Image (cartoon, helix red, strand yellow):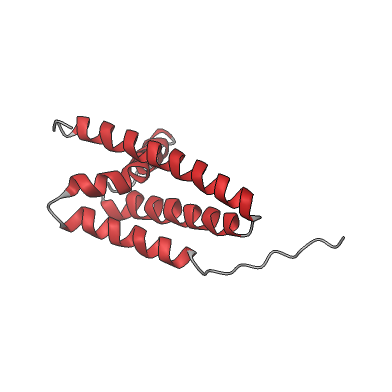
Length: 125
């Protein structure tokens, strides 16, 4: 059996990237940041870890939202879109089980990030 050559098809990935850019812009410019903390929570933790790692390595970067947060948002949403696209190629039973497991895991991950970020801002949840 010949091995299939990987062929990149952006398809649904672009919609996840658009969702990430919209969430980033809404987080910066809208007043109801609690909603967008739920969407961007894991990306915020990723950006913070990236900034601390670069700081520990002795690389100084400006502390702006476009420096670490936007690339981490695009990376997070892009990888999630790529994973979603790859799961769509599976057989129907594997697809349903994998999508259900992914939805539960991502929901739990976003809930924990949202809860912890609300604790940082001293707001009750």
